[in-house]
Amino acid sequence: MAKKSFNQKLQDSKDLPKIAKITDPREISMYGGTKLLIAPPLAYDKIMKQVPEGKLITSDYIRSYLAKKHGADNTCPLTAGIFINIAAKASDERGIDETPYWRTLKKDGELNEKYPEGIDGQRFRLEMEGHTVIQKGKRYFVKDYRDSFFELQE
Image: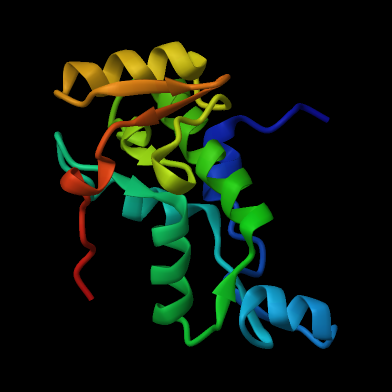
């Protein structure tokens, strides 16, 4: 069987979105409730495509937006990370109809080493749009990323 392309993975919604019911007290405390949304890859891609040049968004913000939209307490951080990376790699694979994935940062404005072209590629694209990237230890962050934050409309 041939391996799926990133664009095939992006289009494959399986049975998503769905809300998983959490019963473990430790997990309820960690996620802030019993309803955990698992959104499809296209939901992340759709939001990432809305971020205009010069603006930034974080994966945490996307997760909280989607959770609220679907009436869940939180969104699964593991699938969110995987699906955001699928959206980035699918965009790179297409070469057209680009999703500006480099504008989606990790928590606290950190760059994502799993994006196509890694940290260097994301840093280059962000600096081309006027952002300043700073290094803290082995990690990279957009300086004052909140000043360029993009608010999604309900």
